[in-house]
Image 1 (cartoon, helix red, strand yellow):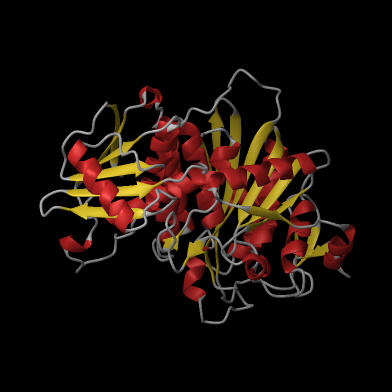
Image 2 (cartoon, rainbow, N blue to C red; image 1 turned 60 degrees about the vertical axis):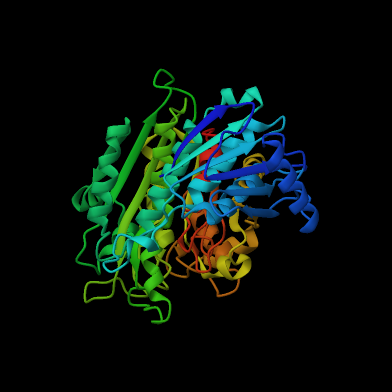
Length: 480
C-alpha cells in the first residue's frame, strides 16, 4: 500500500514532482514563476480546471502537473480523480500533491483513497516480470493551505482500502490454491484483529442438517467448510437486533453434473467473491472498531462433477426442514446460501440480513458491469442500500420479489425446486432465498454477477477482481 501523509503549508515546497489539484486558475500554492508558467500553459491548452483536465509542465528536471477537480463534485468523483492521477504518477517513487478550497480535508482523503484503490496489482505468480514493469510509487504527501487538513482522519478509509485489496487478493487466487480448506484457514487468521472465528468442518455441517450446502460439495474431494465470523463492537448490548452478513463461497464452480461450457469457465474461480466481500467487510469493521455487533457466515464449497456428485432430479432436505428438488446442479449458490441464511437466523440475533453472491447470469446480462441487482423485502432497507451504493460508487438497482415469480419455483414432488424457467432467473433465484428468511426479518440479496470482475479495467478497479461490495457494505455499517 502507498504511504500517505497530510500536511498544512502556506506555500508549496520545492519537489521533483509537484501536483496541483485545483478548481480554478489561481494556483495560490505556487511560486510566482510557476504561476506564470501554469497560466500561460492553461491559456494555450484551454485548461479551465474542469474535472479530470490535466496540464503537464516539465522543465527538464522537475515536473509540475495541474489537474482539475471542478467546482461541483462528490466523493466518488474525487476518488476517481485520485485513480486517474495515480496513472500519471505511478512511476515516481514519491509525489507531492497540493490542494486548496474549503473542502481540502475531504478532497485529500478521497484522493488518497482513489490512489490506493487504483494502485492494486496481483503479481504473485509472475516469475519473469522485470522491476521496471512494476509501479514505483511508495509515498505521497498531500499539502493544503486550508487548516482543516489538520483534521484528517484517514485511518478508516485506509482500513476500507486494505479490506478491498484483501478481497481482491482472495478472488484473484487460482482455485487449485484457494480451496475451501485454505480459505477457511485464511479467515481464521483474522482473529488477530479481534474477530471471533468458528470454522465448521464437514461432520459439524452434517450435524447441523445443512444438506443443501453438502449436496453442492459432495462431488469434490475438497471438503466443505462453513466459517462464522463475529465482531462484537457493542458487547454489552445483548438484545438489540444485529446485522448479519452471508456470502457465497464456491471456490470453483464447474456446474457439477450440469457442466458449464468450457468458454469462460476459468473465471469460475471467482464464484467465491460474495464470501470474500463479506469476510473483507468484517475485516474493515474490526479495523474501524465499528460500534455494533455483526455476525457473518460464509459457505465454502467446490462444485465438481464426479461419481459422488449431486444429480439433477435429486431431492435434499434443507436445514430449515424444507425440501428442494435439484433441477440444475449449476444453480448451486442458492443452495449454499439458503442453509447459511437459516443457520445465521437460528443461532444468532440477526434481524437485518444481507447476502452477497455471484448468483445468476440473468442479472449479469441485465446490468453488465454498471449495477448489481438488489432484491429486498423492505422499502426502507432497499432505499438505504441504494443510497449507500451511490455514495460508495458501487451502484444497485432494485428488482421485484412478487408472488408471480415465487410460484415459478414450486416443485411437483418437493416444497420447491432450485431454479425456475430461463427467463427471470435472477428474480426466481432471489425468491428461492427469500423462502429461507424468517418473518419480520429485514433482508436484502445483492447479486453481484457481472460486477465482480473487470475485464477491461476502470480507474478504481484495475483489471481482474474488483471486490465489488466491500466499499458499499463498509459505507452501510459506518466505516466511512
